[in-house]
View 1 (cartoon, one colour):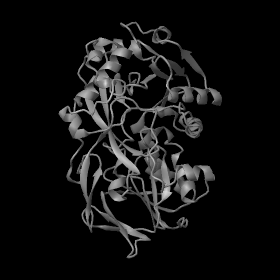
View 2 (view 1 turned 180 degrees about the vertical axis):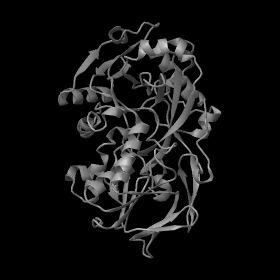
View 3 (view 1 turned 135 degrees about the horizontal axis):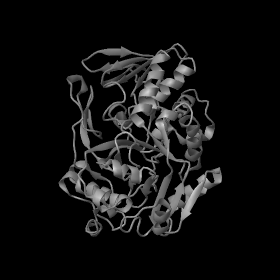
View 4 (view 1 turned 90 degrees about the vertical axis):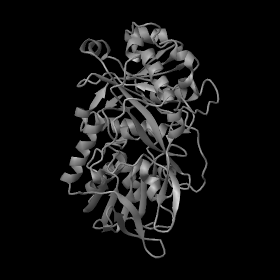
Amino acid sequence: MTPPSKGARIVIVGAGAFGLSTAYYLLASGYSSITILDRTTPPVPDGSSVDISRIVRADYDDIVYANMVVEALELWKTEYKEFYYPCGLLSMTPTGNPKYLADALANVSGIGLPVTQFSSGQEAAQYLKLTHDKPLNGLAGYLSHDAGWAYAEKATEHLFRKCMQLGAVFVKSKVDEIIYSADRTIVTGLLLDGGKTLPCDFAVIAAGAWTDTLVPSESRMLATGQPVAFVQLTEEEYGKYKHLPIYINFVSGFYAFPPHPESHIVKVARHSYGYTNYRTVPTSSSSRESSQPPEIEYSKGATPPVRTTLPKDADDCLRVGLAEYFGRDIAQRDFVKARICWYNDTLTKDFLFDYLPGVDNLFIATGGSGHGFKFLPIIGKYSVGSIEQTLPTDLLDKFKWRTDIQKKEDLSRGGTPLMTLQDAEAGVYPVTNAESTRGLNTSFMSNI
């Protein structure tokens, strides 16, 4: 591995949270030639650094990430304050805290962040003044008061502007392939859409769910799609629910934001094991299969398809969660919009900041694993620290390209097991047990 010189021609593939934050911290550290590439101007519509809201929470079972969020919160509350909405986070599970929530509570309490615990859903509902039938029934948990949400699109636009003001160059193009030296130990450039070549001295691949299409990960990462939907509230309903915190059910994976102050829309989603979407990735020498988001040809004027429905397992889960938190009437409404948000999951759900083994000037910055956006203001500091090998040894080890490929269960996820998007759309589900497939249980739907 060879860290770049300050004057090296550095290209960054991907203009999401990881790519833009890395670009910003490189520029702020004195690197003078930074080119950012993506298929369209950020925020990229089918990326994960878009949308109206992303959770900002220190509630992790891993103290490293909990402490990183405390660091990020300082900037969310200052430099990014116009994009940050402190509202609290209500974390709930069926009575008898699972390990993840118990460890997260211990970490935020140990850090000194304020929390209020609830021994029952009824107690939490009374605290939040929820008046619909059986709100949060059978659940228990706690409210983390220092959490909130970020206006993702606007925060991303802000960081992109900062990068451009510092001298970054943006190139609107898909990257078809990485160009290597004959012995494949050096990257010499990138092959762009249309056959153009962009030479470089150092390359950073921060392409999120598309990373594996450029750098074969050999099962170290997997692109998974997660369901997201939007429900319109009336002006009166906005006034009734605007005080609510974000809500997460750590068994079903359902989470909901309070209604957006501009549109009065409630965004709901599921943090689960997700959907895969395998496609053939062609290369100059061969082809292989890789899970990746559906292709959108921005260069030909295409835009992400507008959808208002989701696979039935996701629809059921989101409507059950809406009934838990907002009541049956809101749960039964048509979605005004829906989408599949694509994560890039690593085996351990840790971020990946490391050089590709055997290639001196190719650095990988990815692995948001569904929890990366909250670190937008600071994640580039950790990426650049890994490029320069100046991070503490324990963090370099945590974020490294692992040679021991061992999967670690992500205890923060709930809902259905991993399945293909095609099976989900067709209603073919890998049902294993009632708890892990709560979103599929029709008895829940009969209650709303």
